[in-house]
Length: 186
Image 1: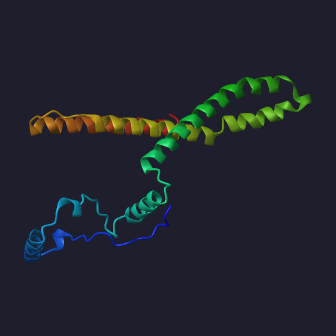
Image 2: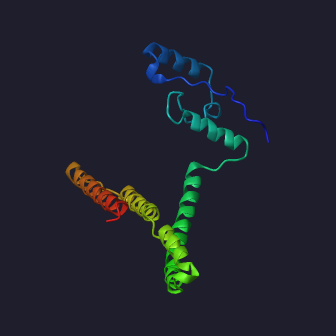
Image 3: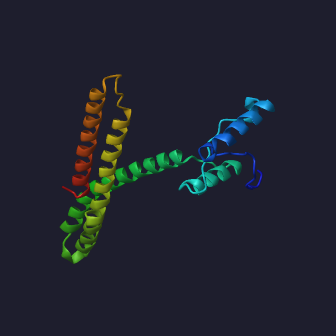
């Protein structure tokens, strides 16, 4: 595995910053030296003042060092972990309820009622409920956003396209209101 080191491999010119004369001279020079397509690969350029500039360098570094997992892959992995954790919390809540009842039934002399109160506080805490509600609200937002992104607007008049856009916006607004009510525990 080679050590990552930034190096100059390409020459990039920003055409929008060039004068017409510079563009013309560049075109003439390129056609005169007869450069083929292999020397001019298709690329993505990220300028240093863009917010994802350092993230792009970090991504390139991880590829060179053989430790690349795309952001999308990492997000998907975290989403899967979150689903598992939510399911585990729900199962724990279901298991805790009869345990709490049993602990309370043993009576005050055994001391289990105090443990039952502690367990009840954790399982049914405001924080646990808020976390679950936030996760559910986020799921509603993601689902509606994904749904909206998959809508295909048929070739139509400008008026129909605007109608479709308005309908999609309405669905997204409704989903956001629904997500907010879930997040608030309503």
